[in-house]
Length: 135
Image (cartoon, rainbow, N blue to C red; front, side):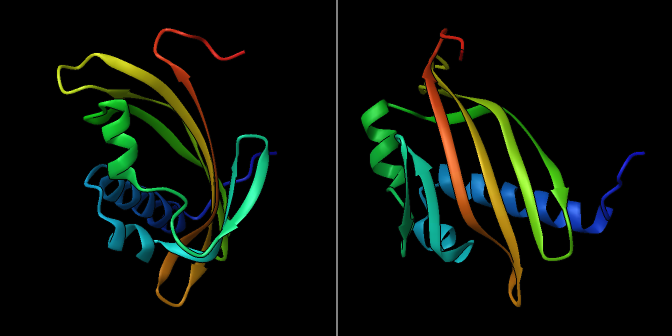
């Protein structure tokens, strides 16, 4: 027996993720903050932590990695209700300005529906250097 999600809810969640990715790549901290529901749970480096602001600065991260953009983002809403949704970024490639791959990233996102729209309340990411395959 298959379960179908409400297409309207699914599309709202996808639009929220697209806005997140656009804001991240634009290094737009005010927009990123507007898409978060704080405190935000961030799962990374073997531990979970709660944040009252976005866990890192995309501009600093991108500069340190010489990252220009993200390409080939493959993501989907895997389950959603009218109050909560899970979205998986299966993979995406971060590249330099000349298109040289830097790393592959994957992520898990939990979102909640608020009075002002869908907001992220938990995220987790994994990155591996370009050319390496995850275990």
